[in-house]
Length: 157
Image (cartoon, rainbow, N blue to C red; front, side):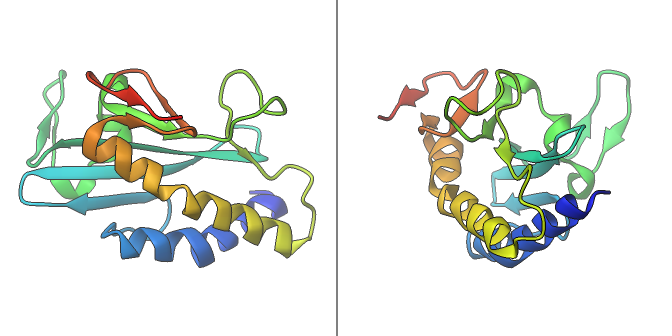
């Protein structure tokens, strides 16, 4: 794990995790759940393979255990976003010309030891959580949401 990755994780712990907690998500590291009587909202922080960036991927499913196509049964408490079909999840991403064509994650590459830069990025991501809520609740495609599915989603400018 890189030093930059450690600094980014700490900033997310200071800024993003309290914002998720306020919205009812529980979790400790990079996988979070929120349960209602009918739904489970799943959210994962996923870091780029080569470091320097991350995305938030999230989705919603009905409550209950999941039986995989190969027969494994996964309890609710062990479910994460990867268990959902790509058509039932979305990503919160950075947008702009500086981001790559594939992952378009939030970049912290080159931040070095400047803690204020990590904190600013983590705060910016936390401020985008209403877009996550909009997608989960109504399929609204906010300006930083990338979705492969979501029938009936509508774009918000």
